[in-house]
Image (cartoon, rainbow, N blue to C red; front, side):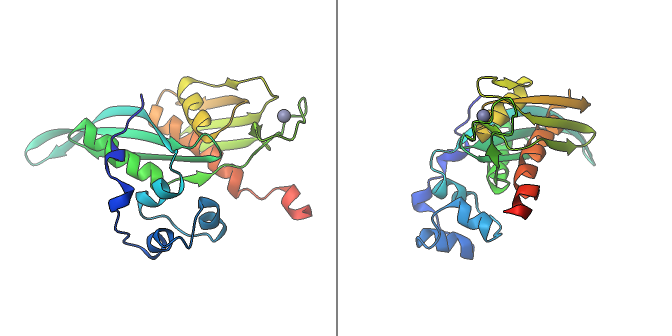
Length: 213
Ligand SMILES: [Zn+2]
């Protein structure tokens, strides 16, 4: 399910609230690469929309959450949304609200704030093509009792993964990989976060290659 919920906020009327936001509007920073290289934190979703105009959103899950209040039981919706450019960037976020539409909007904003680079490559010994169609090395993601192993695969393999994992991997720009999951994989939000965690670790893990290089 694609959503355009958040996109109703236009970037041309954006008034940046942070220093990073102003630098982007003034054209001093023109790519997400620069932000991650400098280790800066994204605090405004418009930053992502400015720098990644082709970003796509997918609603991963919408569930009901019950909350006890003085007035009795209150139901709210919890949405999980993934964003990505199908070319090395992925974000995942959630949001709660009494209306589904608002929960999705909040989740879409949080997904943007959580965007991170994915290190892609060809880590498959059967392939060795050196193109960024898969992962460079195996990566393990965790979230609340769910674990997923992302394993580099050869070109043409496709994504050997469940539907939710496929949506996230595709948004990240991974075309071929094997996955193995463990734990309560039926809990979609935790499962989605474990896939995101595995992708995020590809960038923040220091490899032997980095030490040598
Ligand atoms: Zn390859």
